[in-house]
Structure formats: structure tokens, C-alpha cells
Length: 204
Image: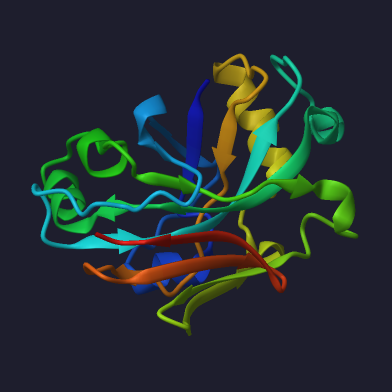
């Protein structure tokens, strides 16, 4: 099982982090299988970072084996989605980026990929018209809509499958909108698609 993630996929988020790339293709990175945080288990802030940020994202789960998938057929390769959080050790990321080094230790550390309850794609009229948001301690801190993606879900699947064989159970985190921020011990995080709560856990 692979956890595949897309970076810089919302223009407003790129602006808030002062990224100004002219992207012609999706920016892809991987998380480890030990990154997954499931079933409402708490997220423990790691001792190697003083600035861990939440990044709320729509996540699709692959349910069919595929390689070199044409974009027009990509919809056949997933039937469920959810909301997830790509936790990022922002202080480490800034240091690594300044040095031109890979991101793995700031993005793929244990429990850095929180994942909610999956729901059928058929619940939604259009996967590229889905609103989602994150509440912390009862206050909405981040919201987005898949219509604002720079690269759409099916484009991402087609692109990724050029490089990696997609297998049943693989997860694709599709990028985060503007509004990322730090978490602290005691925070209560709740993630929603539309008005349905699919993710609920505490920071310890």
C-alpha cells in the first residue's frame, strides 16, 4: 500500500507559503505506510519539530490495479473518498527546502497522514465540486473546494500512474487549500466533507 501526495495543488495555498511556481505537472511526494493515522487515534506531536502544521485534503482510495492510465479512464480506478490531514513539520521543511534536500523526514514521519472514514464517490454530483473543511476546537480553521485544484483528481491519477503501478488500497492525498496552521497539544480536530464529519481526533 502506497500513500501518494500532491504538493502545491491550490494557488491560494501556494501564495500563503510564498510559493510561486509555474507548474506544468503535479508535484508528487510519498508518505510511508507507517504514516497512516486511523480510527480516531490521537496524533502525538513529535519531539523533532516545534512547528507541526495541519494540511486538510481530499483523499481518494484506489480500488483497481492500473498502470499508464489515460485520464479519460481514471474515474474507473476509485469509488471512495474521504478527508485527511497531511501533517507537516514546517520548521524541518523550511530547513530542508533551503538546502535543496528531500522532504521525507518532514512529511512522511510516523502518523503524519491522518485519514477519515471513506464514503462513496456517488454521493457527490461532481468530484471537482466538493467542499471540505477542518474545525479545531469547534472553530473552522481551513476550508476548500476541489473546484480550485490546479490539477484535477483524474489528471493526478493519470500522471502518477506513469511512474508507479497503482494498486488496490493505495491512497492519494490531493493537496491542501489555504489556511494551514500549527497544532498544539489538546487540540480537537474534526474534518468534514460538505457537512458530514468523517475525521475526529485529538492532538497529544
